[in-house]
Length: 135
Picture 1 (cartoon, rainbow, N blue to C red):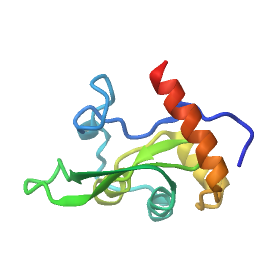
Picture 2 (cartoon, one colour):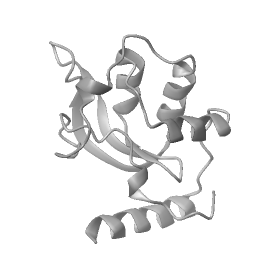
Picture 3 (cartoon, rainbow, N blue to C red):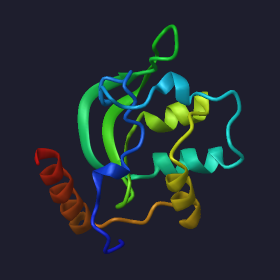
C-alpha cells in the first residue's frame, strides 16, 4: 500500500440520485454515455476487485432501469487511495458512466488490478476514513 494517506475527496460515484450519494454530488444521468471507453471492461474488473472497507445489508437497485432491478448489497470498496460503492461497476458496465480521469489513469497504472490490502492496511484506512467523515 502507498504511504499516501487516504483521502475522501477521492470518492467516486457519489451521484445525487443514489440513496448513498451526496445531495450536491454529480448527476448519474449526466454521466451516462452511449458508448464505453476502450478500457471499460478492465475498469469494471478493477471496481469489482476493490477491497471491502465496509459492508451493509442494504440492497441497491438500478435506478436507471424502469424495473429497478437488484444490483447487489451496498458495500464500500477501496484500493487504498480511492473509494467507491459496490454498485458503481454496474453503472459503468451497463450505462458506460464516465469516471474521474485521474482514477482511470490510476487504475491503468496498476495494470487494472487493485493493490492487495492487508487487514492492517484496511484498519488504518477505515480509521482515517471514518475519522475524516466525523470531522
